Length: 236
Image (cartoon, rainbow, N blue to C red; front, side, top):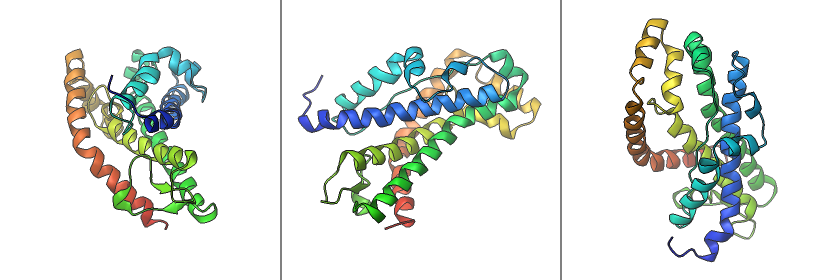
């Protein structure tokens, strides 16, 4: 492991809490819409308590976020989780399954909007300072009253950034990402069967993930810059 400086260690808990919350709500949204659509497989994950999600995916919820953060010098954090579902139910109710898949990215959008709202409230009432958008980073969309980041400005900046990027990544329409399961919302039954047949081979998921990773690497920063522009277009 590369040498980790004190600033990275100090910011690790804030990043981790924001990322853990984001992953938990993303998966809880999947589980909730699955239950509403008739699949109770993930009922224990319809909760804001991260414990069931961590129990199911400790590697993606705990180890990957921490190691990714330490190995890249505290620039970003990544993690993953999953909510189980009944494949037979999904095949019988493709539209309900598609809504379940869409619920995760939708929850990301809602969280990003909430974080943006809190940051704007901070600038309006708590003395938080806007910054030049070109200098924004994932963990610094605004600064504290003294022009320095605080735990709260960092937390809500990270919450905004993480959810914009998680939402984008998961909407890429390739397996095993949510986006491939959202596509049937816009297809008839015949085309839905053909679409899912494209991803029946397990190897297709690995190829899809590689494609998604390449696309995400190229799109992440432009999308973040665009989201920062929108953030400041509706406030100071």
